[in-house]
Image (cartoon, rainbow, N blue to C red; front, side):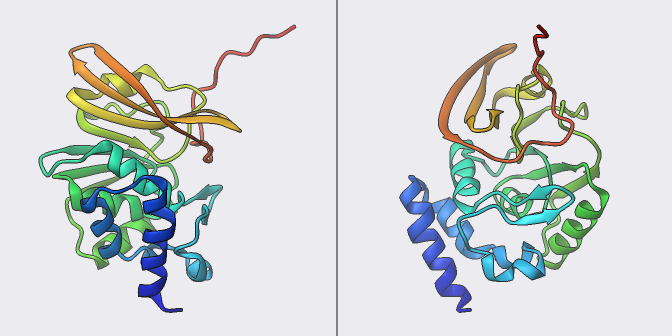
Length: 216
């Protein structure tokens, strides 16, 4: 495979055409080698428009979704970021290149360890990786940016409460096939504004809060 040609095609044919035009995001996707974070048996699919299985019931998000999320969050060099779902570590790497620091939580210890090794190889050190269940919120601190790499049927209030004033949260909310990516802005203390960005469908975070079901 011609990796550079495949990377170019991914950016030009998938990502630009999905309304991702931020030059900072496009340059980042060109520089951070996605293929190094893909499981070896799926190397040939590193730049494909699909979710690549990671094992343990988890998958990498598609490249265009990762790019669209980064563009919407508009991450600054002074931002502290909370990522729920380290997965392969690729999104973690992208976030770390843009932000001051990234605090990433992964439920599966094996995935977290593998991601840590890849991040070290690429010299990315402004990260803290934790093994734990962050699907209902993570109590350690407040953040400028929060991003969830799996979907939730409903978004727990705990996530909003971890945003600093001016902070942004991006999550995919709903149940298949009707999910939407939403951006939550903390406009002032205790006041939040939600904007629907686009429709999509991605795997759910394990142990996500479930809506109440009516029994008849």
